Length: 119
Length: 242
Image (tube, rainbow over all chains, first blue to last red; front, side):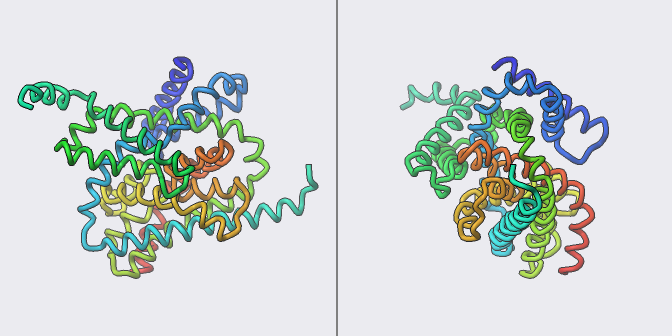
């Protein structure tokens, strides 16, 4: 667990450093995730060492959104006069975007499956 | 009661109480989620937020004092985001196999999320500031807030909309995908991650590690693509709908 956490924090530092140094428009942890992904692809043995603790942390991912969520919902009362437009936009846009992403993917998967022989 | 007062003042001043509330609130929310057989309607993030907000109101604790303790949990979001690389690396062969469907799904989903969000707000006379605030709502919150600020939106309002989108997507995804007859875990997970970022990814991990990995991938690549195209796309959308 100490080993896994050290690796995760090292890569978060690397990600934050890279973002700062190059002025990238993405958050440091996302850059850290990409760097760790590259490292795990290059050294698959590392993956076996990190997997148990890493997946345990991700099993409780929901918990980690709670502190920010509490503050954000406290601010929700200040949403203002346009609340109806915003509520309908969240509902409509989320459903439309989920449908489009999944339907495009399904169509493309059906096409690629046609072309390739089954494994 | 008066004899308890010094103890209460002591506890409320230390980070311990905020941290305890966070873990207990989530523990209860997760217990309810389990009792409801992991029904999407019993979303543990939403229930924990409601329980803790109610508790804070009941004991008269400010969000600032609460966050002094809760920040230790909040901090773990960084390493957890980095840890998403672990299931992603495990699923790499399957990602390669689905490279084209994933790329097309991402491109379509990322653009449609912004067009539809801005379009609905503008058509309902919400105005440019509201449109800029909601445009990046499907991206993970640090990216969405930065884009909103640059585009003349209100970052704190964007944070509310991002979290609401994540919770709404996590609740409705199962029924919506069933209705649309989307059967593959790959497409369901990826679409959930692209539209509902980390909260959708958390929900996907509770269903299966494979779905979680595809959702994590969707969240990550949508964050990057949104950061790249929103500064160009959003002003044009707002002008076009306006």
